[in-house]
Amino acid sequence: MRKVDSMFDLTGRVAIITGGTGLLGQQHGEAIAGAGGIPVLADIRTDVVDSSSAAFRERFGPEACVLQTDITHPESVRALLAEVLRRYGRVDILINNAANNPKMEKTAEVEFSRLENFPLKQWQDDLAVGLTGAFLCAQVIGSEMARRGSGVIVNVSSDLGVIAPDQRLYRKPGLPADRQPVKPVTYSVVKTGLIGLTRYLATYWAEAGIRVNAISPGGVYNNQPDDFVARLANLIPLGRMAKADEYQAAILFLCSDASSYMTGQNLVVDGGRSCW
Image (cartoon, rainbow, N blue to C red; front, side, top):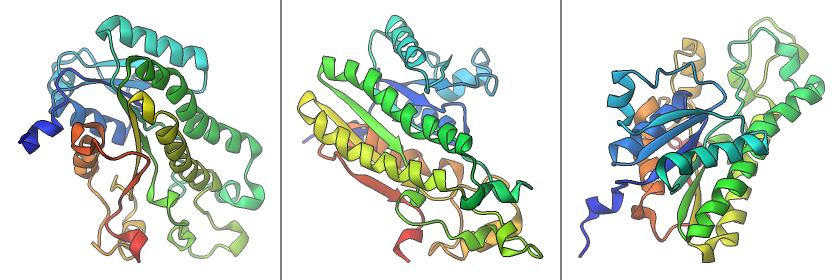
């Protein structure tokens, strides 16, 4: 019988992680590296991490790299794939993690977030990164994996792809209703769309040996205001937000052979929020 721990082994497998220099992108990279894989952190911003430092190599492995990529442009995604194939000769995993995510609890621009005033340009920009970017990466990188006959795609959705945002979390005292900040409509639309994209790709590429799943994380603690954290924790059965590293095992599960008979599914890891 195959040992369970060997099912999580990613030795030699190359994983492209979009939004790779962001908070969760780096956590995904650590998970891949910790299982022996090679993380490629693809991001429009590359100044967030020093890929030449010893700390970077210790965290992500000696073969890891950061590649500047604008996933909203097909030519940039094709250049990303070409560089990965040049360096490593293969790509095994795609984690569609990139997203625009305005932190409405911190902004003073309370009017723009409301549906009545939401700018068309912001709608287009958010969908371009979160949905079009995921589509382009799946189209370009997934096609290469299909050509090889194996691969894994993980789309990073959200608990707000499963439930609606509770806009009471973002309320500010003393403001009239039409001035209250809200979680923008695009976040819910993008994260819900990624779950639909997951199901589509899973059936489309099943015969090509590609598994496609989504993960829907809950809120991650990142020094948000104490009052916001307390309100959100009150909506979560486990009574707290997630630590940044608490999704690593779930990502590893979805990327590895441990989930070899799982495709087209959405793994919800939200502290129980969506079951209340």
